[in-house]
Amino acid sequence: MSRIAAITDSTFESEVTESTLPVLVDFWAQWCGPCKAIAPLLDDIAATYSGKLKIVKLDVDSNPATPPKLGVRGIPTLILFKGGQVQATQVGLLSKAELISFIDTHIE
Image (cartoon, rainbow, N blue to C red; front, side):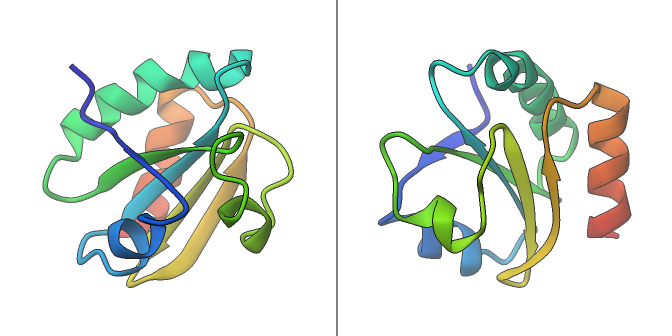
């Protein structure tokens, strides 16, 4: 079972910018190979960071309004929010170690 919630353009503000926890948003699409490759890594990380970090995913094809507002041009794009503000952005496929380093650098 996935620990990662799917969000939409209409739920983005309540799920991400109003969250009390830091939020990692995975911008992805069904047809994107690297997006599918990173999904199980994010699911593992969601378990590890339970209670410290919320991970959500937003399908760029079904939700066209949010990605351009945040400058998302390629996928997968991961954007880390803390206190409703963008802390960091990472584009492309990462290894699990790289993902953990990216998260740890910005949520401490």
